Length: 275
Image (cartoon, rainbow, N blue to C red; front, top):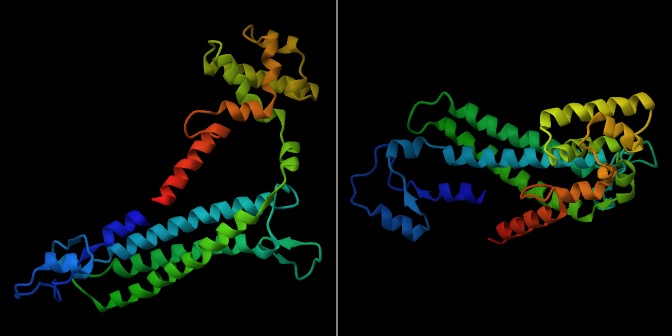
């Protein structure tokens, strides 16, 4: 939105109805006085342009899509099947039928608002697409989607922020959901670190997965002899792979999901917000 705002700071004053004005006004001085960064370059374009509205609506719609996907994550993970997260009562409602049920209404409404924001963008673009150059009365229809999108974001953003800030996370349920199969890629990486091509390591791990399934055991329950027979590069420390926290911590490159990397990402995000 800040980047979008930078491109809206362009002054159309002096463009007249379409052809500019014969009066010798100083448009640059007017722009400086009114707090604009620059002036429009062409009067015909200036009076027919609603790109600044379309860009804001696109930004709003994209924010809505991101919020909707976050909301969907929370909805799924707050379900009884997962139980990873519990929303605060302030951001939930009870069921009208089932006394024990807690509905993630704030997230469901956030998901719904994203459709409204997309609709505002599509509505404006549809209005503009058939217009000839210069101003047309159709353009009066730009106000409703613009103001509606701004109002919708102003309502939605604090709700999402509050819901996430007050949510409670059940780390016990998360740990219980961990399965050895999630670490199969770590097995492939283990071989790669020992000089095995990923194509080959991928195939070897696939064979190990099928072997575990055939024995009705997990990968960590396979005997070491099974690993050694699958590939000579496996050593006895291979079973150390099946420690989830080590797996997460190993993702330490910039942008990855290891604790150190995430801490750096959070710091960058805080700096960005502070600016």
